[in-house]
Image 1 (cartoon, rainbow, N blue to C red):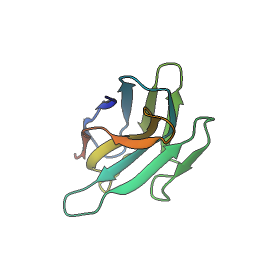
Image 2 (spheres, one colour; image 1 turned 90 degrees about the horizontal axis):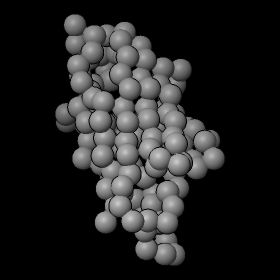
Image 3 (cartoon, rainbow, N blue to C red; image 1 turned 135 degrees about the horizontal axis):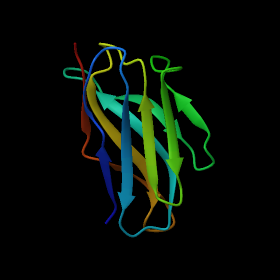
Image 4 (cartoon, rainbow, N blue to C red; image 1 turned 90 degrees about the vertical axis):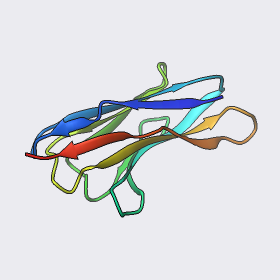
Length: 120
């Protein structure tokens, strides 16, 4: 059983910063791409950022220059540093990862989500 657990969400003022963390646990062989998605009320879940095992990162246009995704392969963790938060950033943020738990095909796993609120 593979689990992804997010932490670090909360309330922040516009222009502020938050750092989200995601930790993978369980029995598995390897973690491939990891990423963060978000879902605001009444909207579809959308991609925020992804990072490959060799640290190649991609970002949604809406967060480029403000958010930074990173990972630690030894600790099986991923992080999302969010700076200059805007009123349009509030959402539940989900961590996802492609994990090889049962060979030969990795499958996606999702965390339970962490709430980010931006308000003055």
